[in-house]
Image (cartoon, rainbow, N blue to C red; front, side):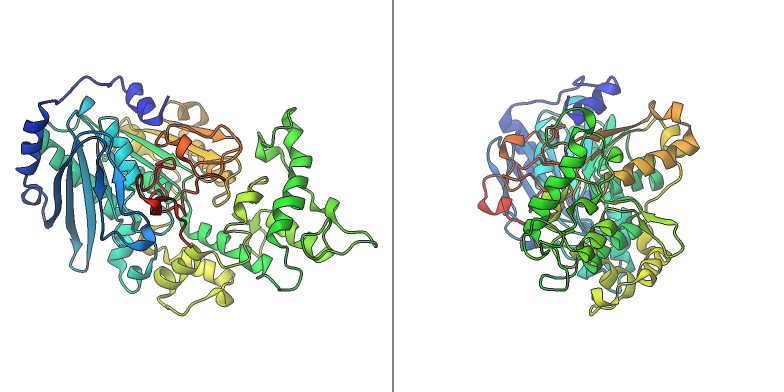
Length: 498
């Protein structure tokens, strides 16, 4: 069952209302709509009727977001607005209103990485299933965080205000357009989008009846520190004892599977329960007759020490936990970013533009002090690490969370840790009534991987590029759940951002 179906079916509210008319009447109704008069501080940027199978075009989309058009999968009315959030910040907002509005349902979608890219594949997915579906640019344009420099309002938008503002606007517009208020409101996002869902449940508990939060980037400030540390450990290509990408992809990955794949009794390329895998890189240490350079058959002592650090929990100097260890078995995809021998870009931009306000900041200045500074500043309340979600639970809200066991960007052990953190306050016995967490064996970051990872995130498994779909780096689908249908009908849709 798709997550959208699971959320709505669990509320006993499926397809009870339909707002259908002739296509000509619907088109006229769309073109006579005046959304800018309904939402405060708004300017109209787009109003058009789109027939099922045609393309929504966005020629001015920031190139870093990827894609210039998206095929729609329902007859719909497309609304675009800019909405002021302060005297120095605004959001770009889109709402897709399908002709057949089943169940009077509103769906808000999230973002990815550290970007400001509306996830058009998710708008297509939601509207195809009868949801009035909205998205925002999260307060800035493009995949960079440069707009956050010396502008706390842009950071606040990125943290939570853009989504909250967009959801409120979507609710008003849906009621004005259809003549009835939404009966249910839902949220869908992964990675940064997963964090946004948790943050919404914490800060704006009345916004949603149900939230799907995949691979949530919770404890966001410390996550950026943990992801930054990989470059300090691996070094750049050509540096002393650097482990080449091919060594990770072949020698090390194969040895991780040799040690851990069959722990569940089946050798299938999937580490079923990652917490049971304690990879020992010492088995790869060269003897006196082998060297450790290149794509070698063994590692030298310094390289083995490097791996021990990478596969261990990340700790403060006093030994307390800073962030859980990397997922074993993720090596094939992790070489694209965490293990690529270059700085993790999202972390660099976070420290540069949101924490230090210094556009020249680089990884040569990364220390535990930088992590402490980011966590202490908590710009825009980005941290997202609530000990309880009692207000959301009390109003009857439901959360479906999931995380891939071979996630290559955010360790799934952090989601397990977050679940336990909530359970300590809500009680383990009560959690299943409102917060369900699904571990997905063999799944990479939000989708892709050797496991059975298709959970309804857009339903586009057949269109997934070879090697899996990376939700934080694939243009058009980053952090969303569009399942590989990014930029449908556009050759740019599957390009990968740097």
